[in-house]
Image 1 (cartoon, rainbow, N blue to C red):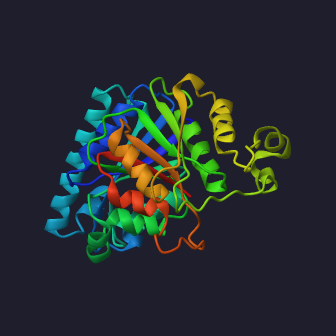
Image 2 (image 1 turned 90 degrees about the horizontal axis):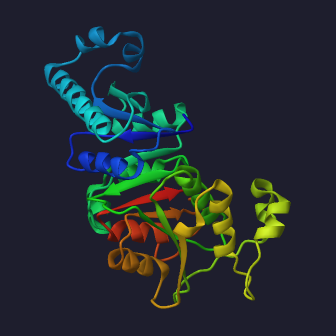
Image 3 (image 1 turned 135 degrees about the horizontal axis):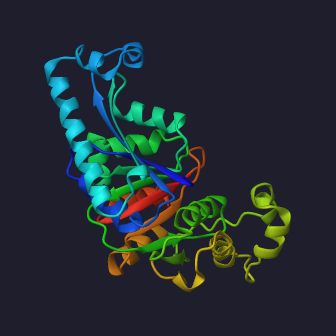
Length: 313
């Protein structure tokens, strides 16, 4: 299949919300493969897991872990039934309940490195930034350790096909829109708003167009990285990426604002005030300084719920 996503589910309250989100957006997308995985921590060695068949492996673990493994199997069967009941074909769905001695986060990240996936989907608990710093979370740890695979975090109940995409003249914005275009190019209902903030504390990053030559090609860049009098080319170039992928442009619109203090605040404000179900954001590399306010994506993650956030980069 053309696109493939890895979906981590467990016994938490947000796993059913992840499934509803997938049904909302992709139930009629036959080119999308969904790999559901549940990780059961245990004391079995990695060698034992690799060499023993499931029945032999189950006989080596303690009773409590075996019960969790069986419950995971039942939960996976229910997830499979929910997806097929909502229009997914059997051939699109792959399921696995895996025992692991390395822990949930390590095992999920290991799978992302070994598999050929276009995104990882996980649930996001509704923690404040302070609470997450104190208690930690699986989603937060995966976000920190992720090797660059686009990460979709589903928080609460998402009910809209409308995507909000913050854009500027930076490479990570282009990567985010490129990922979005690849995933949504034949989606029949999705709508996209390209959002630019000129807020007071916005640190506008305008990358010279020569920087984009390697990935996008000189001819494409010379034609489409045309900016205004200040050198901004965020709207035209990102629209062209969507158009090149085949996304219908009548379902794309622009939104520009110069109000507010900083971009993260404006993104949260518009998400809460309008009918957006997903925010798609590029993320700067870890070695780039993000200043006293941290990154925009960090602030947005800490202040929204009932929305999915795609972090690319």
